[in-house]
Structures are given as C-alpha cells and as structure tokens.
Length: 516
Image (tube, rainbow, N blue to C red; front, side, top):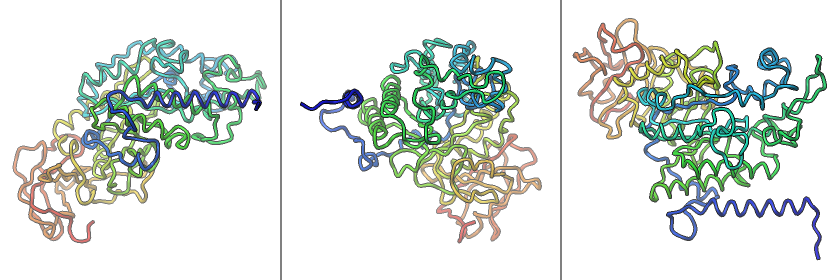
C-alpha cells in the first residue's frame, strides 16, 4: 500500500477541495445541462464580446474607500506604515504609535463610515453623467467590504462600519439606473503584507517584531510571505493562496452578480484558477440575463478579445478596435488631505480624448473615512453635471469617427501612467459620432483666445457640411470650409466654462487627405 506524508495528504485534500469548489461554482442555474458556454481556455474566452451598455456608457465613477482611508494619508497605507522612515510610517508613529505595538489590524476598527449615505452619493454620480458605478470590494489590505464567506473576521459586517458596503452600494446604483461594478485587488496582498513581517532597524524598538509576525493575525497578514521572492503581482504563491483568491472572488460574483468585475492586475493565476474564475463570471452573467452576456471584466493586460483592457492613469495613442478603459482619480487613490485634485476641465478633456479613441473613463472620487466627499470633490461632480446637460450627446452612446482628433497633444505610445504627459490646449480637437453616423461631434478642448476655431481635418476636400451648431448656443454661427479647414467664428458668450462641442451634419464626411 502506498504511503503519503502529511504534506502530500494536504496537497491532495486541497486539490479535491478546489475541484469541488470549481464544480459548484460552474453550476450556473438557468442554463441547460451539459458544457457551459464559456470554458476556462483562451479559445472559449475569445467568444467574449463587449456589451453595448459599456460601449454606450463612457463614464463610470469609482469609490475607493475602506480602512486605509482612516489616516487620510493616501494609497498603500497598510503597507507603508511598516516601512520605517516613509512619510506614512512617520505619520503612523506620531498619531497611533509604532507598528510593533499598533499595526493595521488596529486601524481597521477605526473605519466607521458613520456619515456614509450611498443614496445621496449615487444621486450626485448620476447627475454628473456616470452610467456605471464601481466600489472597491477589497484592496491589498485583505479586508472584504461585504459579508465574506471566506474572510469571516476581516470584513465590513464584522468590523468597522458593520454594514454590507457592497450590498448598499449595489442597491443605490440599481435605484439610480447605474450598472454596478466591483473591483478586487487581492492578488498583490501576499507581497503587500510582507512589510508587516519586519521590525524597526533602529530606534527604541529596533528588532521588536511588527504585528504581522504574530500567528494569530495570519488571516489578515498571511503567513510564509516574509520573503515573497517576487514583486507585486507575482504568481509564485502557495496553492492555498490561489484557492483563497478564487473562493473570495467567486463569493463576490455569486452574491452580487456585478455587471463589471475589475482585477487590479493582469488576469491572476491564469493557468491555475484565473481562467476558471473568468469563465464562471461570464457563465453566471449569462444565467442572470437569460443567455445574453452583459458582463464586463477589466484587467491590466492586453485582452486579445477575452475581456476589456484597463489602463491605470493612462490613455491610448489612437483608436483601438476593442473597447477599453482608463481608470484614474481626481486626486489620490485613497483620500489624502491637502492633495491637489485634477480640475474639472482636465477631467472633461481626458474624457473627450479617451472616448474619441473607443475608451471609457472610470474616475475615482475617494471618500473620507466618515463616508463623505469633500467640497472640492462635490464641486467637480457639480461641474460635470452642468457640462453634461449641454454636451452629453457628444459623449454618451457615441462611437469613434475615422480619426480620433487633431492638435499638438498626443501620446507616443499607449500605456499606463502616461496621463501626465498630456497638456491639452485650445488647438486640440477630438471627434465622436452618433451611432447612426448622422451627427459628427468636434469637441474643442479649449476656447481660442482669438474667438475663431479652425478644424483642419474638415477642410473643403473632406466633404460638404450641411449644418453646424454649437451645443449650448441658440444663435446662428458664421462658418465656412476652406482649403485650410473648417473656420468657425465663435460667439462672444461662451456656452459654459470648459470645453465645448460643434455638432456637424454632412454626407460622407471624411478627414482631409492624408489626415492630420
């Protein structure tokens, strides 16, 4: 008889547990018996097609909030408080004490969200033009913002607000007609919390272990990750960790059936559980919508048709045939006092640029630890609402034109973290068109100081323009097409404070030969 050691038995039992979990997860009700439409392989996943609701939506709003909001010191606080000498570590020692005595486990109960009103906030988001809303389900801090089956202690019903944050956000989104999304950031947590395994290298507590070394808190800080051996979203993690990721994200899907699911990483652990999770998400969505796929999965990896690619704080260099998304923030990812926000104009310029290239903008407004937004954030939302009332038709439900635009502001190469390289000006114009192709929109990203706008792309050789209006302006405009472009004399009164839109009709309009 073959004998197995304890580790071998553990591996066999873990494999059996995963198999049973995966089988149960794939048993989507409402679908016929037999093979499900999506299987966990690339050939099957390439059946995916982005739903029209996402292509029409263009603007989503994201609320990145949770225990890391408590100090109001920005992103990655749960890691950086353990990095001796960092600004967040210095803040932590001054306000809470050294991490050997007061760690992130002690920050978590301080998050109360006592003034959080999801209905009021969703009303602001809807008025600002958002067509979908995303909440952060768990960050790298390993804290679940719902009644988590596989994280029973460190979740928002057991600690902190003691509320089903995901459920209340979902209810508010549905009530206001917004699609509901959830974002997960768990794949980095193993590496992220390796910092909690150290100790101060100098000072009065040098050598005293941080609280992440205490085995009784391994369900928060993990165990065995003292020297993770990789950076950030590595895949060299224990099988049990991958199964934990699979179980918790499956739990999110099965409880809330989000319209959008976002992984803050490439597709996690694709060869082991990632493709299984993605197939389960798509199949669950089909079951929820009577066989019509309405799901959007975002991750930071070229989609090859399997999902919708996301670029963090980045834009494409041209029109992508596949729909895509930029995720960015008006300020810091988590709330940070004194942070310089993007202006409303910058947000709208980015939105026009992204939409002209077949993309969507997911924009984070980080809440304070009490669940409210500050006055600057609410002002940006109000500015967006004012602009959308006049110009929203040039954004929502549109499709890219033959070229995305003209002007000096360009990115050399598509990618993340390139948004800061774009300095939009009054010479930059972006194009969108209605789905029926009857209306072309030229979105000018600034107001020319001389009061005359020239759209070089639409010169006399681009086809005959039959009608032209300025959205928000009721009077007639003086305009003409010349060899140098479409020349428009603008009214003395601006139709708003930010970027503005020409609505153009004409037959078979095309960019001037050679493009711009």
